[in-house]
Image (cartoon, rainbow, N blue to C red):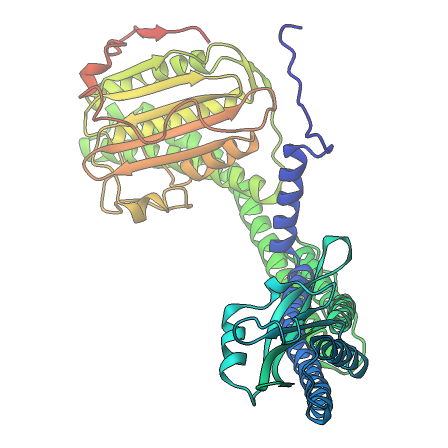
Length: 563
């Protein structure tokens, strides 16, 4: 079927996706759980220690079993050989080959009876002789077991006992470990003595079985020890990490603002002391925060009350200042100038009171938005048009670049207009008469507005404080607009009320760029449609924009685009 995608699981029912999910869960648990991490480390180290110990014990036991069995075999073979040699020495020399062969068979039978070996071989040393007994080889003895090196040692050392580890054949075509022991025997002969090589094979199957049993027992005991130590570690860690987890959870609640949470205190140990200290710290923090909250509430009420109380006398003073300012032409120049200054400062005082009332509302959390569908591009056009005279007074060209942002978005138009007026007013005042670019764009999730000036710019430490209340980048600079120092702080509060952001970029000699980003229809706010850091290197200077014309008096030229 077209467009369908199927995920094939592995033949054993375990897909790669399941493996990755399990791996991610284990990694997350490793990072976040002290108990899990400690248990895993404890079990891993314990298992390694037990593994090394079991290997060492298995090797030691194997060596001891082999040594004990070897010594037993050599002693048994030596006794059987000595008995056989004594029988040969007591035998009467005979010239009858049949009697000599009967003696050989009897010696083989005696060796088999006096030892636990049924693998016996007797080879004559020297050339064959019709008078000497023929070699004797047990039916189950394989001549290939005797290596040339062993035969050389046996032939060259008649009084020594030699042995060699070999693999003896067993049932079902198997092989078992064994030992092959070699001696020399002296047979009485007609012309002296005939020498024969005697080889007896002993299997170590019983020792191998014992070793296998011991090894299995060691591994079972080791596994049980690992499980027991892991369980003990879990029980011990649970008694230690549970109070730590409770402390972490309680501290998180305390950091989230729940000042009434406390840790239970049980016993007199170190954890109890920690819990008591934590509770004492929480009590102190709660007390101080309440004191600060009460002080902040008093300050908010003071600012609000003073602002409200000043409204009435300010209204009266404003009316009187307006009347005096309207008649300033009738006064002498000094008095007329005083009337102008009085009128300007009263207006600034009124703006300051308005801003203080707004700040007090933010602090009290009583600000409410009046949302209505608004086109951000159209709002920017209106603000630019309303500030044409101010821009013309400073000799500044304001350009609007709006490839998007025409689709209405729910916002408090009054507050957004205030943000734009504040950003544009600051850009005009600090733009050094250079062009200002107002950009509006949008995407599926957000709309954004940027105000870019090419003035002196700000240092990095100034950028960090630009939204602080009553802060100015250059206190010695004379303000021509008459701001209060609260405009950017209020603008930031308005942006956050909408669930948006207000960010700034600035560099000395390159100007500043403020970007306001608002979410569309309550969607989560991701990246802004407009870049915060301007790319002046690509495209050259401002003239390379080529999108708009400077705003002239009474006319706004805008480049529009589709949203």
